[in-house]
Length: 415
Image 1 (tube, rainbow, N blue to C red):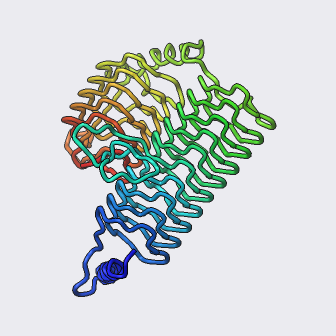
Image 2 (image 1 turned 90 degrees about the vertical axis):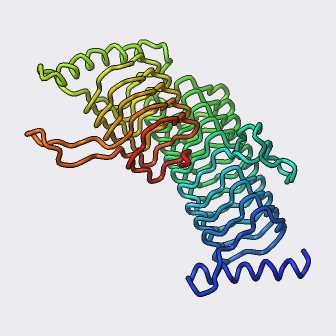
Image 3 (image 1 turned 120 degrees about the vertical axis):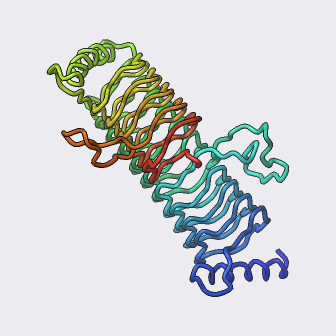
């Protein structure tokens, strides 16, 4: 890097420092599309800086503050980001192949697929910029060092983490659906309540991993080392565990359920009885409201059903038909609505915290506030829909009414 470019970078960083401190003349640093290969940004406050589409290969970000930074589609191949703060940073579509993120804070960061590059590989390709015909691509973290990283609640759908080092990383409540973790080192990691359905963990080292309550439905665990792992309440339905090392694992507390098993069918049969009781309750004919938790209602036909006021927490509605269903003031916290049909569904005032809407169809759905009335029928207030922590990646939202919805921590949504 020539001295003239170094001076230009330093000038931009100085103006950015002034901007952060709200000093006169300060300007936000913008490095969009620039080649900054090998520059040393260590221990620098880079809060909300713009590195979108920049080439940051082999740059040093050790202990840098990148809170809220824009790293969309940036190339961070072989960059050093040890101890960096990436809280609320935008890193979708970025190349993190071989990147050292040991001890980095990435809590709640979205590492889902980007939209700018036709192909993300180890080498930066200036001709691979976004075209109208470009396909959505997966995040590339192949071989990245994420030891001890804070990835709580991170959205890492479909990412390539093959051979990545995730030893002692905190991935609690993270979304890793369809991710490739083949050969990854996850020893001692916290994967409690993580979404790993249909993920590839072939040959991965999961020694001593905390997988309590994890969703591993359809995951590939062939040849994986799970010795001493805690799988209490984990769902391994349809998972491939051929050749896996399960020494010291208490499999009696693992959920293993075939979608066509008697237990799954029983869930659906029982639900119809519960639904009858709920309908009577709504109509004032006795009955009782539906209260369910952790049951399998996948692919059930519930079109047009009135479930207003129901409590349906952590329920699997994957692929279910909920079109025109009335779900006013429902509590669906933690439920799986992946690939569900929710066209024209009425969900006003519902609690949808941490719901997985990945690839769901919400076309024309109503997620506006619900009116709260007194016993005399007078409107006393409104309850907005709460989508805190929900995953809307790939969801169809054409004509969806999200008026006043609480969207804190929502992933996969761009207004």
